[in-house]
Image 1 (cartoon, helix red, strand yellow):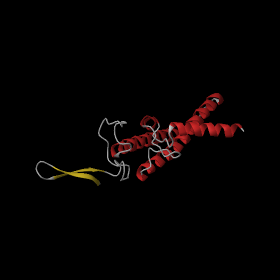
Image 2 (cartoon, helix red, strand yellow):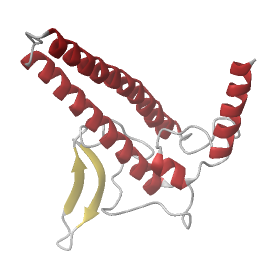
Image 3 (cartoon, helix red, strand yellow):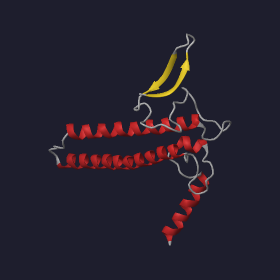
Image 4 (cartoon, helix red, strand yellow):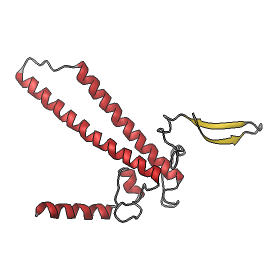
Length: 168
């Protein structure tokens, strides 16, 4: 258990707020505390304050957990339902379905590495700032895509440059 703070109760005793490392994603530092229930970041507050960092950290950890649970479900289904389709057409259909499912899991594996990188940026104090311009990434963009590393403008410019390079 790690302590997230200590408060004096009305009786003078200590009521320590504690959480396990699992609750905290195994990390401490910026954004490691829990945001209040129902909290949503707003532009009225200081950008990437501890509460916002905690909000995005929780969002990233929840997303990662969801992906890992889906992957575990896919693995269990693969183990439980071996492909023994007697009909060639049914077998081809099942193989196609599993191919799609496995490609999806591979894409999600790549998303997990981006989630881990975003969590490292929170720890380093770089989260929420464009890796190209250094400007803050909008809260709306971060809520929609918490693994974003560029402002919308920088991302659009990057994609245009990439398209031009690809077309040449």
